[in-house]
Image (cartoon, rainbow, N blue to C red):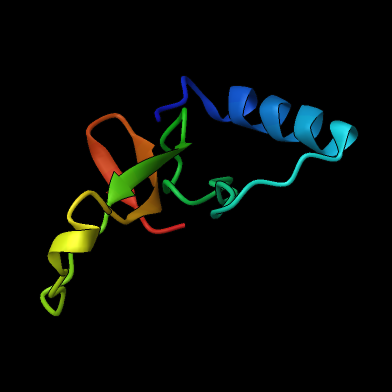
Length: 78
């Protein structure tokens, strides 16, 4: 699932908190001041890469994701 921008993500989480909704998984990081002055700096989900991933057949559809901050074509650690 991709989000258009960090404001949209924040709005979704605020609405979920008001409704008392809890979701499984991580929440987006704050990307404020993480892109070295590049704007807009937005949180995006990216697939993780692991050299030690020996996933069994029963978990073949599991694709772990993590968060990065993105500005233009560049990615930064949150």
